[in-house]
Length: 92
Image (cartoon, rainbow, N blue to C red):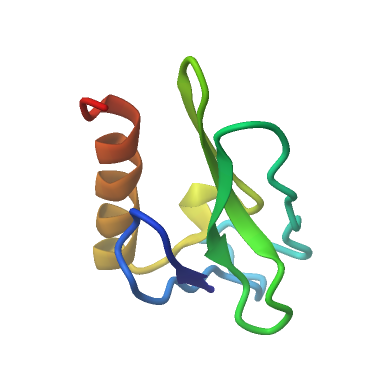
C-alpha cells in the first residue's frame, strides 16, 4: 500500500502469510472517509481502495484498515508511527 497527503510517501507491506511469530492479515479492511476534515492518507496498491483515513475536525484521528503490528519491517513501522504521531500532535 502507498501513502499520500501529509504522510510520508512510500510503500508499506503487511504480513498476509501464516507465521508463528507474526500477526497475519487474512483480509484488510477498505475504509471510506466521511465527514468534514476526513481524508484518505493511504491506499492499497492492488485495488486503489483506502487503507487509512485521517481526520482533523475538532480533534484529530487516524484509522487504518489493517493492524499496525502486521507490518514486519521495523523501518516501515517507525516511519508510519512517526507520521501518525506528527499528524495527531502537530500544531494546526
